[in-house]
Image (tube, rainbow, N blue to C red; front, side, top):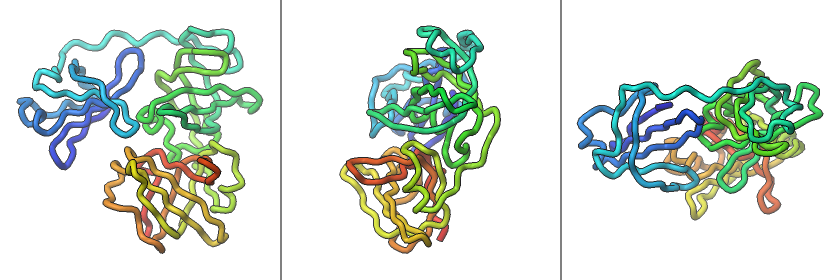
Length: 275
């Protein structure tokens, strides 16, 4: 168990990992949770899970529908796979192997349910993409906390010459998030992690899938859209987008969707109402 929490309605949300490093959410509806006969398993617990695969919003999950679906185990998990220490520029020569390397946190991109983190060599001349699930990204490289060009270590499996499937990682040398104005954000390359302070809400709308689009501006007079996916909206604890005139702090990465310039928020830390 990586983390666990109980919703206001009494359902259980348990993030788990396995020895291969794959993470997934285990969701136990309140009607099942109250009949379990034990408290929600805590971080570090070892559990077995039975249920059915489901996708809620863009979150992969296992839904448990019987009291036998979660069993707390006493045996420790089997050992994690070994990772060969290499230089990031050597990644293309290790397809199919488990490797470990360091590089600079450079960019984030999203494509059909998967996040891709661009990691570059120290001279910034060589780049590798790291594929991650949403939970992996936010627990490791939340743009609200980890700044552009932070030095990070990646352990993963090389899938192709420039793609590594994430298993786990760590921040070796933390840099503060890149703080920019709205005008500066518009001029940054796509994927760049950033923070905009003291922006003002111009307008907002809720999309049909529950995601939010919020137009913001600041003293520069420029405007940009803040996009928050429905699964992240659910983590914010807000019933609706903030009204026009509200002052907010935004953290995420630069993106463009159908010609609209955006900052995409990836965690609940990425959107805060200041006043």
